[in-house]
Amino acid sequence: MENVPEAALDRGAARHKIEVADETLAFRTVWIEDLTPTGFQLSAAAGFKPAQQATVLHILHDGELEDVRPSETVDLRNSEGRFVIVESDRSYRLTIDGERFDWPCRIVSGGLLRKLGRVTPDEKAIYLERSDEPDRLIGNHDLVNLDAPGVESFVSRKLVWKLNVQGVILDVATPTIVVGDALTRAGFDPDQGWHIFLKIEGEPKRAVGLTDTIDLRTRGIEKLRLTPKEVNNGEAPSAPRRDFALLEIDETHLDVLGFRWETVMDAGRRWLLIHRFPVPVGFTTTWTQLALEIPPTYPGAQIDMFYTNPPLRLASGRVIDCTHIPATIFSVPFNGWSRHRGPESPWNPTTDNVVTHLALVESALAKEVGE
Image 1 (cartoon, one colour):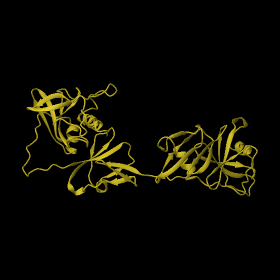
Image 2: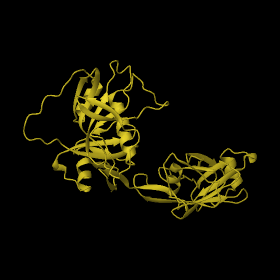
Image 3: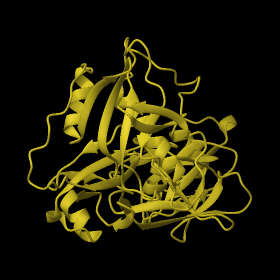
């Protein structure tokens, strides 16, 4: 067991020191006056009364747990003086990498399994083997009920992290990876010139550079999305229009992501236009012009729906529902997607803005292609 001091058993003194752990495998020192104590004597020395029906498990030198009955003796002259002693009326059998353990509690955590099986946390993951469905990954804080019929079998496997790089799934043996290395492994030329965005579930996409490091242990990492940088014919682009201001957080977000964007007013309606907005693989185009209607009292009034030009179509040919609400901006036709916030996540003027609405847009697009 890791990080557990070896039992200090003083075999020459009248009182002898042993190490006793509870169901969390937290050890404490207990003194006993017999080198060949019974299970009853061990539980009594640990502070348990007979009515508590304590279970005594002897931790052998190889890490296995051996049940010690109340009348059974343990020879501490020739064995380790380490025990798990808990109040329990039965034990539950489990195996870790084929090694058998009898555990006195109905519930066991992933962290305890690691201690029992001496599984290194930075190198291996623990799985509960299942016959009719995929094996279950057991995290350190996950709990497993051992009361099911049969013996619960756990196995440790070398850790592998997955990263989606523009549709290419990488198996990574280390918990971190440099963005440039990820592109190279996925078959993309890092020097070609990319806008690179890291998408994490529930968060706006974030621009990253080739030298940035991604921690693959971060919950919710979805993918690295690549879009080619703008290529022009050498002519200076016209200055984008700024007919009205957005929130500072909105403008900063759009600029950091490298978008070319404009705010325009047409026929009394206020629009945010984002040129060459990237769409996921699975549509018939890589880009679209995205339009968001910004209410005059924004952010007090919410942004609703979004509009695209040209209309987006799926490569599969399937028709996308509720995407035919017409709008015209400077004589250019747009198709509106009827996508709205649900009652459980209403617009909050203090926290919602263009940034959070773009997350809704990306989620709606990704849903259509199964991302």
